[in-house]
Image 1 (cartoon, rainbow, N blue to C red):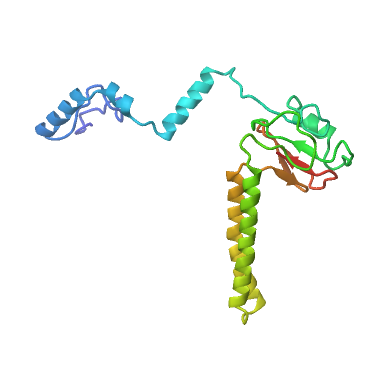
Image 2: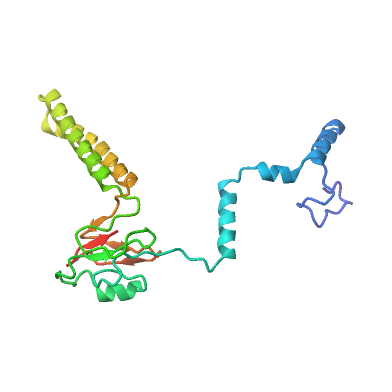
Length: 227
């Protein structure tokens, strides 16, 4: 840094020079220089656990290095007129099956939109449920769900019995608090069992799994199944 009016500031002020050194007294500087000389950067990076940022950077670099690699897509409703097809654009799909005006028929009981990245068996019959996933466990989901519902009934009966002299609004408030907990447990169970598909009769937005979201009218003639 410049000292006095006769000394001009360096053009590179604010940058580290190639001759930067350690700060401190001679003993401190000597100790740091010894550590720098003994440091094995190759061994360090072999044992170093990458951070999330480093992992993300590596994944991006790998994706850019292999732009042609594509994920395998699945459509259990391939060829069925009431379902979105993998080779069909969002615009074409909505023109072919507009949810607001498409009428329910034996061949179109629902409008089906399946997750193309979720592995599912081919040739699924058109029915009231979305196709099961590779790791879907409906039996466990139903069993655990019924157990949680029974638990809620027991809790409600207990609350009503122990608070019989309180106003109904106070009892309902206590029951609703327990209900929120049970509902969250049921949702967590459904996710854990891979049973997250379902119906949306009045959705305001259809989120397509290709990464495109298409705004839809909230009035539907045919219900939509998202799987």
